[in-house]
Image (tube, rainbow, N blue to C red):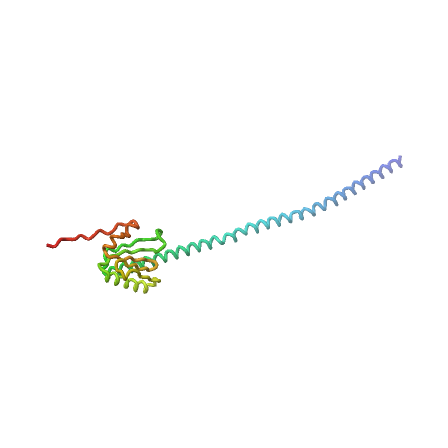
Length: 201
């Protein structure tokens, strides 16, 4: 009986040792899995870092928009400056023609209608001498104002004198020639009313 009980205890010890060995091997096998878990987490961190880098890239790409706004504002400022300069030349021309006793002075705004100039001015002179004097005075004043190049055509005939002030063009006519060509109607303007003549008697 004692021998049987000793065998039973020996068997129990062996089974206990085996089970303990299995537990150790299971623990050893499970341990690498725990160590491998942090390695798997590293790529996720890299991906998130890559996402943050890619998220910051569009901010750098957005910079040209501000430069585009600056360029458009510069062009607007340049066009405004050119318009102010052209209006100053228009006033100078109208004052010069008024000083030279020109008649029926009409100014036409060509902005958006033609690329030849910003303004066109039409005026009438009584005779060829007056037209020539008006043209020379205009050329001198426009040159001093910096409106170059200045060209004058038609002084030799004296019926229709054209003064090219680059940003402004001036047409000077004798009365009958102005009625004949009627440039105002070409640009949708009404021609000045003819002067009323009174009989002397």
